Length: 393
Image (cartoon, rainbow, N blue to C red):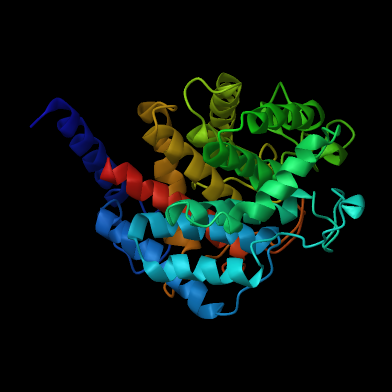
């Protein structure tokens, strides 16, 4: 057996031993609903079982295509990864039906004089990132199908190139926007070769850092309203929202993935990604999840899936692509994956413990086994796809 193969075999064997020998004390997260053996959880076959169970459940329960706003669009970013892993045509078709219903648009106004980027769910908020995340999937469909139909990315290019022609740099004023739009710009760079996308990406990202990033904690506040000490958690601590930082961590992974080695500012994104990985590792709960307020578990206690899934995706992507040390960070994944696959995942394929739509950790808010949402399923699919790639390597 070759050295690399032996190392990989031993790594997976150790994981299996750890998972199968865990105690049954009161502090252990328990689950009898997933129907998946703990001893076999790291096999590729069982990862595919999980991936298909979750995605098929969601698509069967939601047969009608939704609008192109951020939450269904976030699901489709996960669905496309599920397609890449499985090759199931029905997954790609599900996203294509959605894209076609929305005419490969986000917000649909054609009057540029009225385009806005403040929060808004109407068709004149074309420059608001929650309407731009859909472009990620449109570009992916265009690429998967061999780049034969530029109409699929025509609106994405129109919107983003108009935006880049303006003098404004404050388009990304909330953490979620970094996942919504940063990958749009790197994907368009890949299909056009236009480095102006990378220049503007860095300009907008630098503004976001100036209002949301905390150098000490190496994490992001959700937006300027939540910056410490103006806003504090119940115990007077800095209040970093798990899903908000999950958006950023996952978004950075997607950005780095699409950048060539010599790309403008690439090292800055890599450095930030590694810094967040270190900080998040220290805040993980013993049961594997992250609480909704990352540094104050008592603020909104209990498990939460969407942030945990985005973090798991980011860690696995970093390990799979050589940016994060496996010895240091795979133990983080062992714990988070056990939560996702044994607690969040239910027997029928539903993903529970997803905090509802919002922008912060809310004390007293109920998040339980029945709490699910499209964006949380999308995050789960991202994490599961990267777990499959980890085992495939």
